[in-house]
Amino acid sequence: MLGGFAMDDIKKKVFDNIDEDNVVQMLADLISMPSYPDFTKAQDEWELPKLRYIDHKCKEAGLETVWCGEVPNGRWQSILAFLRGQERKAKIAYHGHVDTHPPMDWRLYDPLHVPRAPVPHPHAPTIKDGKIYGLGSADNHPSTAAFICAAKAIKKAGVRLKYDAMGIFDPGEMECGQGAQVAIDWMKANNVIPEFMVTGEMNAFDVGIAQNLVLGFEIEINSLAGFSISLQQQALLEGYGNSFERMVDVTNELQAMVAEEPRFKFVNPLKTSGPRPMPMDVHMWFGGGYAGSRFWSVGHAMAPYEPLAPNEEHRHVTHSRGGFDAHAVPEVAKMRFEFVIPPRELRPGEVYSFDPAPGLSRKELEELITRRLEKLWKEKPTGCTYHPLRTIRVVTGPYIISSGEPHVKQFTKSVKAATGREPKCTALAGTYSEGAAFSKNLGKFPFVSYSGMSETINPHRPDEHCEINALLDTTRVWASAILDFCEIA
Image (cartoon, rainbow, N blue to C red; front, side):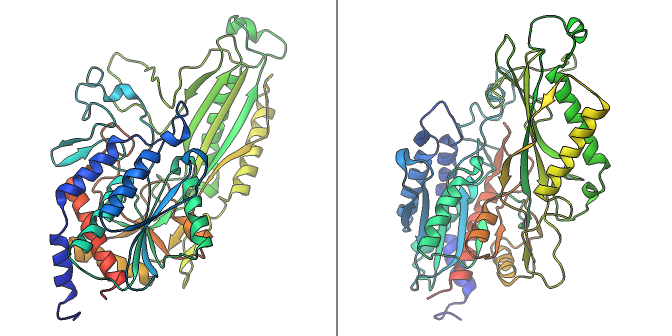
């Protein structure tokens, strides 16, 4: 008993003070504000308006806020928000990034092109059949709205806490978590280290105890085929090499490498990136010919949403990250590709690990890819040359924590108390979160991912949505977790 009331009674009182309309409205507001990299605008226009909105809503809910990372034009600023208890010690932290993936193709939101488009515009929040549609609705935005509204309900119910709960809101997830690093630096300098963290990535009501690592590489190929004559004529020239054709060869070789190498047969039941860690993204850049630079994507994860019509053999998708089709005979081709690397399984008695699966470290992959490229050039000579493989992207992870870790066990109890459902402990459904960066840099504290999304197949698509019931469940989960971790004063 706590002051004559059981915890269940206190939770019910807090749940009754959750303003459901306010939670939905906050998510709609977040959807309505663009917050993805747009290099046509000044940097402080990318995400700063959304950060200011979050700051306002946190203060309105009764939280204390701190801005960190002061830099010219506001780039890479982060917000820390505190629901204060009697003791200045953060028992649980919510982390959410405020940026979203850019629209993969603006035309897919236009009813003229897609008659059944669920939303008329990516930033026009639309409620339909108990779901709220719009860009970011299946990203961190629902959890952000849920955390703030849960804290507001606790304040409104008059509940006094013993310890602090904190929220961390940062930009730059799309730029490999640079905004998270700003928050990390402030937290280290001020010795504000939470005991446990939950990142707001969607996970279909599961508690995410594992996340993947993303390794990105670039290859540049050069040729002398950048003049406007037929491919048949070029093939007769000494030293002929078409960088486009060679890039297709490289793509096929990478796919063969994954299919043939034993290390990619690694089986981990917690991995959610398909039957094997195939390259996640493949992008190709072409240029140097008379038509100038061009962009083309092959096997890109953000493929067109609508299927091809029966009489349609191909589709020219403009604005797929700002690009157009390739010039037929370019002089230069650059390919970027990424591997999704799962964490290794925990050893008996181990609490958590930051190691990749066996044979899939960055160095091992670089050596493997280089050997395959050398093999390709030897077995299939060409006039093309290539620059050495370059690592261009290392995104936080991998990470795995035991489902029996005390904080994880308590959080699963908090989820069940709020929803009535026993959550499963699985891998993070998304590719990664910034949680590993916080844990690695702040002394290796435990973290998991959680967001009450009943579907995890629609992020970054025109039909991206969040079920309103799931949004409200997530709000109750956060209220439950704050009360459990921060305790009643």
